[in-house]
Image 1 (tube, rainbow, N blue to C red):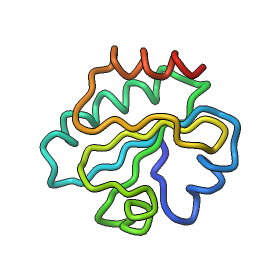
Image 2 (tube, rainbow, N blue to C red; image 1 turned 60 degrees about the vertical axis):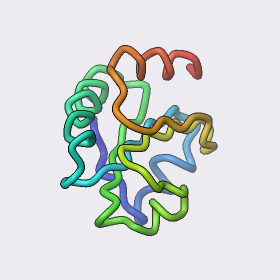
Image 3 (cartoon, one colour; image 1 turned 45 degrees about the horizontal axis):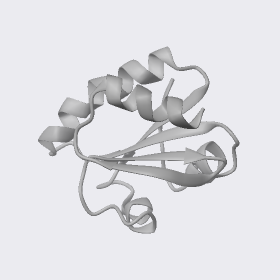
Amino acid sequence: MEYELTTENFENLVLSTNTLALVDFWASWCGPCQMQSPVIAELAEELDDVIIGKVNVDEQPELAMQFEVSSIPTLLLFKNGECVSEQIGYHSKRDLLSLINQYR
C-alpha cells in the first residue's frame, strides 16, 4: 500500500513505528519524479513489511523543510523512526530493493 504522507500522518506512519519506511519526496512538475513514481508504486504493492509513502513537496513544504529536501526526487529510508539513508534522483527498483534489504 502506498501512503500519501502529510504533516498530519507522518509522525504516526513513519516516525513512531519500528517498521521500515521508504518516503518519496516528489512534485507533479518534476520529470524524474514521474519516472520514479511507478517504481514506488510497484514496491508498495510488493512489500507488505515496509511502509511506502509519498510526500508532495508543493502540498507539504513543512515536511520538505523538516528533512532538508532541496532536490527531488529524494528518497529517505527510515528505520525505527530514524532516517538511515538518503537517495537523491531516480533509482531503479533493483537498487531500492537492495537498499531496503540492507536495513531489514
